[in-house]
Image 1 (cartoon, rainbow, N blue to C red):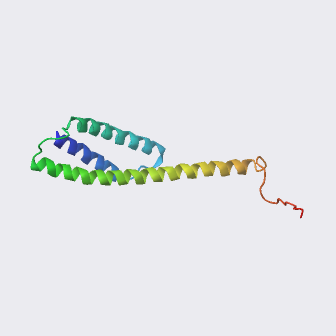
Image 2: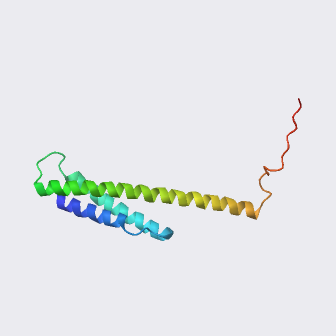
Length: 118
């Protein structure tokens, strides 16, 4: 049981630490593979007893899985931040293109003069 969980964690670790997906199609395939590994790993985690006696080898595998999980979490956070940044850049690009195509659609903020009476 622990060995299967270790192997699934190792596969997820290898996937996450591999090359970054480029393009929308690659990102979708990447997310599907990550979700598949996470689902399988979650099912295996549910089968592992929460308290019990583990052999020395199983404890060693558990420690290695903990280290891999830290790397997986950090890497997934990094990927998520990068993708959020890409989405923000895409939105800004769309807005810029919209203003370029129709510059008079929105009121201009420059050239405004406010007269103040004293």
